[in-house]
Length: 370
Image (cartoon, rainbow, N blue to C red):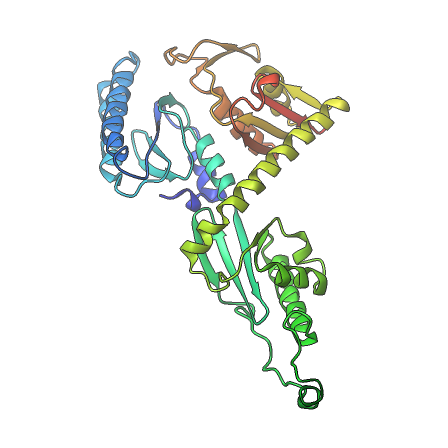
């Protein structure tokens, strides 16, 4: 399943505690040959590792091992590596399994626990937030609905739009010998005002980030003629000829705009952390953030994408035990995943940042409500 299918209800169900062991298997995948051929071997090796981990659990019955291995086998049989994204997530327990394709790189790992590993799904869902793209020209406007790597034309709410047929001032043409300039004509300004108003209505019904695409004169006139709707656009692609797509070309041209928006959001997160530290509403390091999340004081939790720690929980504190520690009562293979789940349950915003961006804060930090 594509991560675009991750709804709050689906995530809630995946995070439900399960009889041990719930197996989560993640691995990076390659979209193009020849490296995509490596994915088959990597998947086979990870499946073998999962089998070894299950055999090493002395408290598991033979029946439980066979049930989980059967579900893992079914999951692997459903994997299609002919058209992969950037990451693969397999989830299986004794009763069910699911396969997820992620538009982001994930580590190669096998995790056994009482819940599924969902942090990669949360990060992929955050990366794949829905957005709008407005394509504008002097005589046409189109609206596109996007989510992650999916983009299609929105043909509702008055879109696509075109101005009323022009009625030129024939006396002006006879007297001066010209016609109004496209980008100074009042009819064009009136048309772009109506476009702005239509976008405002759509945004009120379905709030999303908005990106603008068009030639510089068209975008400038839209901003000048419109109200607040298009003034708040997150990104702009100054290029003509894309009003009608096609979607794959438009999506490819927008990639630098998306990347710039992501960098800007990362910078804004760091600013929020600095401001929180200055007013002493800040937590850094796993123990501090864990405590603030448990107390539901965390407003924002920022962590590096591949941060993972196996711990023993002792008196409410976390004692790292190393990634290779076997599962035993009180030991969690990836406490960061549980922290992310608890943060979401407590209403906190969770932000994933590139590795080493929080090196000065032990790879995880938080903004506190009080």
